[in-house]
Image 1 (tube, rainbow, N blue to C red):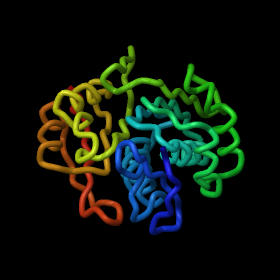
Image 2 (image 1 turned 60 degrees about the vertical axis):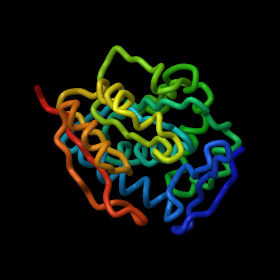
Image 3 (image 1 turned 90 degrees about the horizontal axis):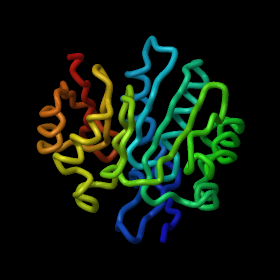
Image 4 (image 1 turned 45 degrees about the vertical axis):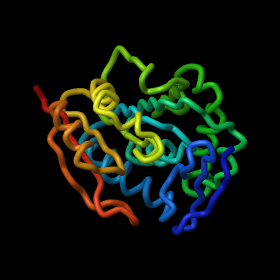
Length: 222
């Protein structure tokens, strides 16, 4: 069961009773998503580009997606967004998050009108956006192409340690293009070593409120 819970910046998150953890930071769901995935990930990786492909690990409430969709729409960047989700939320639950107030009405409407179908196959939800939410686990996910960015937004290592194993990180990193960007809210010595072992240059950045640091890494060009 998922319970709507307010966070410190006024935005809501969900508490997953099965996992025992919130989907977003209790210090601020909206500001964490913007800080980690939009500012440190999307803006960094899309600079000077007219199109971008993103693979997200953990679609969850869709907050990272709608913020990415709005940013790309505003900046006329074509967005191809794939997001793995083993346990997709119902549209009713997503509508209860209150996230509609953080993006333009057209962005929210395009998202919610296509959400259920995007769980089945890729949807052209606007002239500038394709959304696909593979209903699978990361371990079972496969793709015949590479992506520009990975948003690694799994539950924490304390509650979902299997998602942070060396093997799982290597599997995720295999879907990035040379020069691609891996970004996540977490940073540990083990994670840094795992990412670096797959040919990445590591960068420690200031974390979102409540976390001192976060990780961004760029895959070697060769």
